[in-house]
Length: 130
Picture 1 (spheres, rainbow, N blue to C red):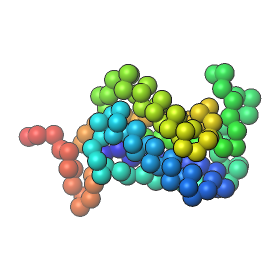
Picture 2 (picture 1 turned 45 degrees about the vertical axis):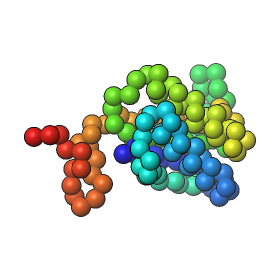
Picture 3 (picture 1 turned 90 degrees about the vertical axis):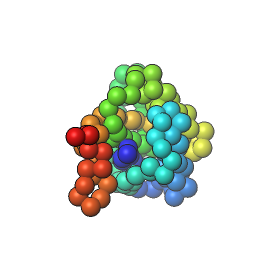
Picture 4 (picture 1 turned 30 degrees about the horizontal axis):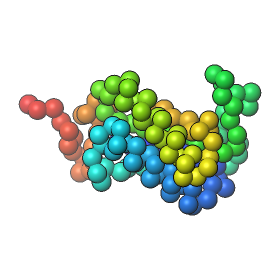
């Protein structure tokens, strides 16, 4: 049920985008127990002026125009340890497969309730039991 939004620079090649997409999905399955085939992603490419980040860096990290923004909306309830493993798996996986700097992998998680999803037909597939 996660929804991943992945934002990259307009000049990011197709192979790199595909690798990022795969790494995010694999990290979900391996660290967060997301089921197979539960791959919902929105990938956007942006002009330079549309990816805004502090040029002086933040929290001891510096960023380049190769920055990748990843926002995942998923069900609440995962532990801090699972989230840390998820962040690590994504940063390390993207670096290993694409050569992008781990520092340029920016991730945000949005925790929601199970009933906050509709997968089609205007239904609440994960409705609470009545």
